[in-house]
Amino acid sequence: MKRVIMNPFSPLPKSDKSHVRGWAQVWAERLNADIADKHTDISMYDEIYIDHGVNFSGGLNLFGGFNDEVMSRVEELIECSDNFVKIYSLDYDMRDIGYASQMAKRLGAKSTSARLTESVIDACRALFSDAETLTMYNLSLDKLILGDSHSVAYSLPDQIVDRNNGKTLYSAIIKDPNWVINKVKSSGKDIKHLTLCLGSIDIRFHTIRCGRPDAASFAKAYAKAIHDLGNKLEIPISACAPVPIEFEERRIPGTGKYEGENFFGSRQERLNFTLQFIETLKLNGVDLVMPPKEWYEMDGEKYAKEIMEAASSVHIAPKNYNSILRW
Image (tube, rainbow, N blue to C red; front, side):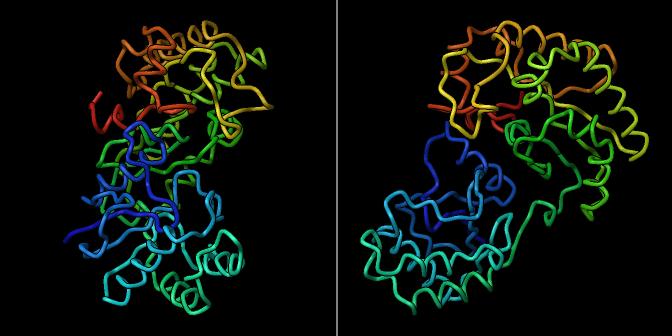
């Protein structure tokens, strides 16, 4: 069974330093699938999986418009569907997205291909309606990594990844102590092991800005919550160490800012907090998933250039994921 992951509207990046490709890579590891680029002949595959993108928010982001290149990919997808190739939608139910309606609004625009017609849109509407939705909870896996967007980098192929972009440790553990329990119990899965990936966002934006809590107190509260959750859920729980701290001049996209700022506190302050936080978790018996120790000791700019996603981002590059390097 040959499988491929693709996006008909925007080709998935080829770069192994792209966070967008990283999410497709994580899915590909679990499906034993290839990742298509704009030159891939998707008709050679038995199953096609549509990846809407790690930052998908419900809309079509077509910087060049619905041009002939986009139209060609859509036509290929329609042809595959007509030839009974099974098509899946990853993470999202395509009936809820409304791609066809968004396409219809582009009819007649200067940047829209003349080949986009009402009949094409009708064919897409039927195709999208028939596509089966697949989430990681549908896979035959019984280990779960749950947390913020960094959980993608920390995950292993035998884990379900429940990624919640922007989720803080404070909101998940302190403010709503039932969040984790509800996530696990509502999953419909008999989870045998849980890994929590939280804390990096708190350190980047909130702990130093708010002046509380100190690293040791924050880590002790987290450790206690982990032990309590383990007892309530009756499963072993691990935690991911916060990500290393990059240098302060790195460009960050608007989606990675808080109150217009890239971070609060100096790099050294945040690094000190991170290291003390990690050490306190260890002293309190928390099983940690750790990136290589040398990443925390590297020059911040060197770490950003060699380990993180290219250009502007807060994420580790896919080529350096735990699933690739086995930290």
